[in-house]
Image 1: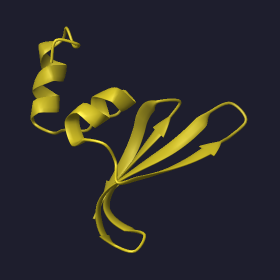
Image 2: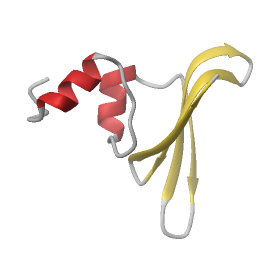
Image 3: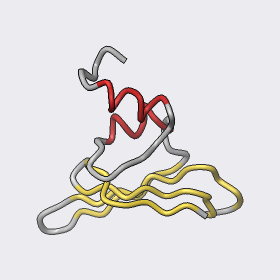
Image 4: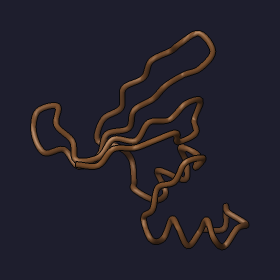
Length: 77
């Protein structure tokens, strides 16, 4: 975890946490690569949904939404 100079960020990643404002790379470091992603290009931003823990066809326990590479929200079932 030499890439992050902030011990709080490293600690949160090691605890597999997700928070608003984290980067896509921090998300991948925390939860791993998503099983599936969906991306929408809008006028002023790119909205990406990273899907984790597949439970069935197009069913996932967790979805994380990023805008321009920054986490803005998530949903866990």
